[in-house]
Length: 243
Picture (cartoon, rainbow, N blue to C red):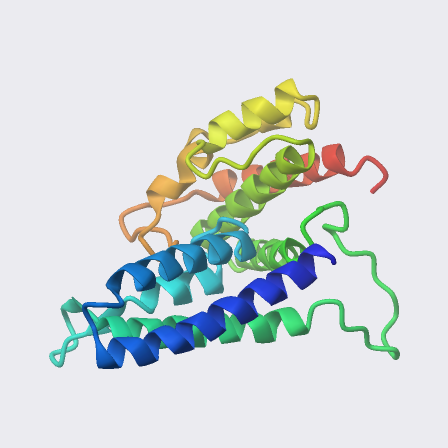
């Protein structure tokens, strides 16, 4: 079974559990609280992997928004009921499943194209990175430097994390971006290209809101955005010397 098959199987299992949980919560809201919390934690872990650890990814944002409900006034944010949350998370998981169903589909009329991230070991992460790479370059060309910066930082951290995991190191989501870079350099997976990163790139997660978008009070310069994109390409060459 491939990693992609594993993700699909996990999604189906969690979707089925979620549907059953929603029914039990309708009958006994208090009794199903512990089971619901455990299920939500499993869902969060899977979403984190499918989104490459990036809060800016659509799946991570959709998952976070499933927990919130706008008040009738439209301004404040209130917590939704447990049954509603479960139903919304199931919808998000179904969207993830639909997205995965398109991965690997081949258009026989299309000319073959070497993917930028073929060296990435996680099957489901490759299309996420391909899109983040395109979005970052497009945003840079459009002058949206903050968006370009965040997408490039997220992609850079994801490829380094993937390389570390494949080398046998356990995944540690609490580990800082800077420590992951240092560990990858010590392991000889990448060279010293990350030394050119602007300082704020090392703590880019702290510059975003809960949904992974750049905070309104943070301004990113064109130079910062370009430097992160350049470092990303250097690291890609380190991880895939034949590219």
